[in-house]
Length: 470
Image 1: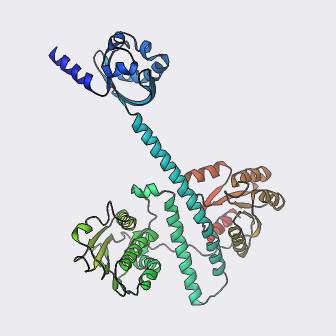
Image 2: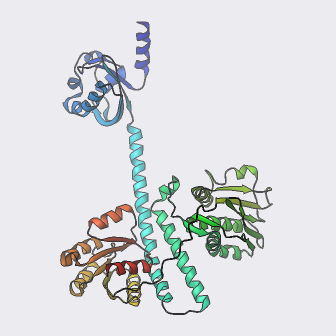
């Protein structure tokens, strides 16, 4: 009896509801918390059937859980329920089987559930904002990429023009990848970022990093030295993301080094890894600061650097002799394994049988530049700037392929359905859009599109698709 009284003292004082029930669904005992939830004294509950106390609707909801616990399974679940003395609240229940039936412990988790729902809503709104921002940023990149591709087809060029064109193309690719990260930024924060790896020489990655960081170095009048190993160092890496690592380190060095300082990027092959160091003559840091450079509290740039290096199976360390004595960031990366070769770039052009193509986009620069480019490839192209015009032109032109912007006036989804009704399977529908989430791709395919392509698209990719369709 003493132990039972001690147990009752504990259960009576606990902030959770406690109930003991028999296999025939009879209340054997309840604590004061549960009785208060039911707005009845314990004596008015004990000995009665569950359905008599909680009601038939609630009984239907909990019966599957009761059947499981009576089979000897521990059961846990959460449920939104209404109690006379509590109101409508989210509760967490834990059922434990006993010889005579089961014991149930219930906790009020309403405030936590509301906080979770509010957080989910905040994430949803943020994701919507980032998706809209990514869409708006992708749209101007599309005509820029198309214009650069048109220049590339104009025959031999001045070397400076050709170099400038290459820089623009690479930076468009870099921007496109970074914009893609915006719509999945939570994945980056959780370290769930998936790399798109290929075999690449270290010097190609360094060249990409120098392109984006050199203006920062030059603006401060720094002297930059680059020392690469004499042997070829191949990496299995995501080139734009790895280049972003070294570009960030170089920009940080330029920012924290007084004007007309020195910055050195050096690399050496050591065993089965390559070691790349970025050293400057700048502000430096002490040991306490070094411990937090890549973790919580660090700037976004260095946190991404640390995370990206880790995803490449590497490591990074920071060194400094102290305040005002410069800094050195050293990245260790594994060399590529096996005999795979460096990926060759895709052919710049494809010989394609001419195809009738309808391009519909309310961004006139995007539509007109894509028309000019596809015409250079030999295709017969018509352009519309809204959904109504696309349907009118499509009914007369009978395109083999319709490339439709989803967000144009008239809705690309509705236009796709209407064109499909007009021409059936004789037309291939291609969604070319700044909306790049998986839900956007799924909705496009469900609306009748055959392909979902995200801006800014490599024009040669679209031409290769047309070649396949032709």
